[in-house]
Image (cartoon, rainbow, N blue to C red; front, side, top):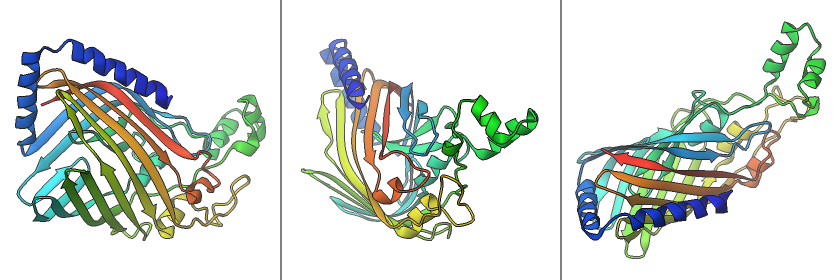
Length: 314
C-alpha cells in the first residue's frame, strides 16, 4: 500500500508538471515567495487517504480533508495545533515555549471524529477523520444480546465473531502537554526538537520528539523527506497502553508499560498548479515501540498514513 501510494503520487506530479508552462512557473514561484511572507496561513485539501489503527478489532481510518491553519505574530503563534511563545529568534536558531493536546489520545477515538496533526512541506496540517474507527466493545455486544433476548456469547456467534477476540478498550482521556521547542535551520537541513511534559496531570509523563528534514524545491514542486523519533516516558505509555487490574478481562490481562521510542519516516510533497491551487501528497510510516506493541489491546507493530488530494491556499 505504501509503495503503491508513492507511485500514484509520482504520476500526479509528473502530469502536473507537463501542463504548466514557463511563464506560469515564474508567477507561481513569486506567489510562493509572497505567501511565505504572510503572517497567517489557511488552506484546505480534499482527496483520499487512510491511517491504520493499532488497536485490536479496529478498522483503518479513511481521511478525506486536510486543514492547514497557522498564524504568526511578533511573539505569539498558532501552528496547526501548537500554541507557542517565541523568546529567541536568531539567524538559524529559534527557541519557543509551546503547548498542545497530546496526540496519543487520537488513537482512542477522541471526539469520535478525531483530529490528527501532520506536517506538509509548506506548513502543518490537521487531518480530519471521516468517521469513527470501528472498535468492537463489550457494551455493544451486551446491548445486542439484551435487545434480542439472547445470551451474549450466542449473539457474538451470530455475528461470526470469536468471543476470545472481543476486548473492551480501556477509556483514556486527553492530556495537555507543554514544554520547550528548538528549531535549527542550516544548509544541511532543518532540525526540530521538542521537550514536553504533562501540565494537565493526566498521564504525568513526558516525551522528547525529534525530526530532521531536508526541503527540496524544484520549480513549482516542493519535496520534504523527514526522519525522526519520539521517546515517551513510562508514565505516559502506561497511562495510554497499560491495563490496570480493575480493567483486566479475558484476553486482556493486567499490563504495565515501560518507556519506549517510536521512529518514523515521512515524505510530503506539494506541486503548485497556480497561485492558489496545487496537488498535495503525504506518506508516513511510524514503527511502534516494544512497550506499545506488548500492550494486550494493540495488535500492530506500526502506523501507516497516506493522503493525496487537491489543495487550495487562501
